[in-house]
Image 1: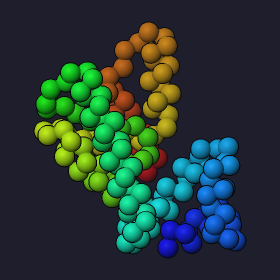
Image 2: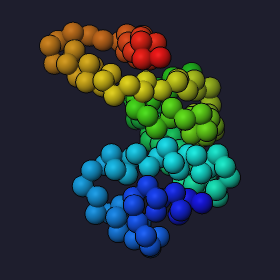
Image 3: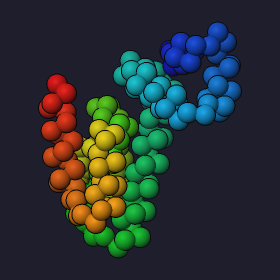
Image 4: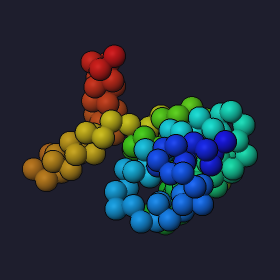
Length: 148
């Protein structure tokens, strides 16, 4: 199923062209935009898609663990994400499971998903204004509410 979705998404006639297309893509959003289709395939039981999500979440949980260890943080810690990767429920639950296995007592926060939020944080930092995670979450929620 994943192969068919990828062929359709990248407008390819031959499935073996998928790897070449992905490797040659200059735009990360070309590849990133396929994530929605991959999570759909995983939700329908595609084993390859499920394995990709599992391995990706494992790697991200390992990165979170490394940050916690290097900063000398003690449990309980909050682990969050920014961006669309964990806005899919299946991906979020898998990420949460992996983090909690690696960091006992961790709280995995819902992702801040609107792409504008990162820009706002950078601008605030640039002009010397402090912005808290709570402020960014509030802004993210407000944007979601206005777009609905």
